[in-house]
Length: 131
Image 1 (cartoon, one colour):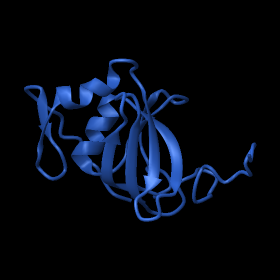
Image 2 (cartoon, helix red, strand yellow):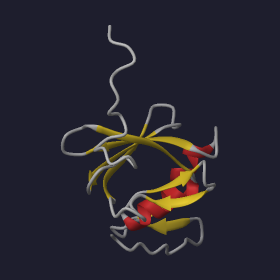
Image 3 (spheres, helix red, strand yellow):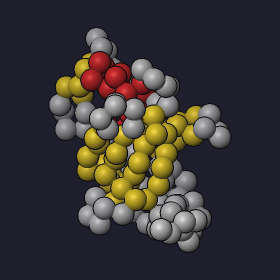
Image 4 (cartoon, one colour):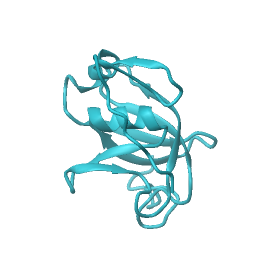
């Protein structure tokens, strides 16, 4: 499992994993409507949707700084790094905001299954509707 170090930020800016400067206003826009942003996680190579999670500002900052996904757990009420217990980490390839700046699409390179059930994706159940 990857070990991530959160470097913090000063003067309303911080550096991502590649050393690029990011201003807080560039990510704050995603949190005007809510403290938590739905985050769709997709395998970069196959485009398969792996899971839906939620990010708050701190988890998005940590994700940008480390290059590994961090989320906010609504049930545990805390930040968590994907794979912190299982070792099934997600290396970030890209992060894109939607047209309304209220949802994120994170493309990743997934190590092992994405779902806590051991399935590759959290969307393994049969469809509840087929048209």
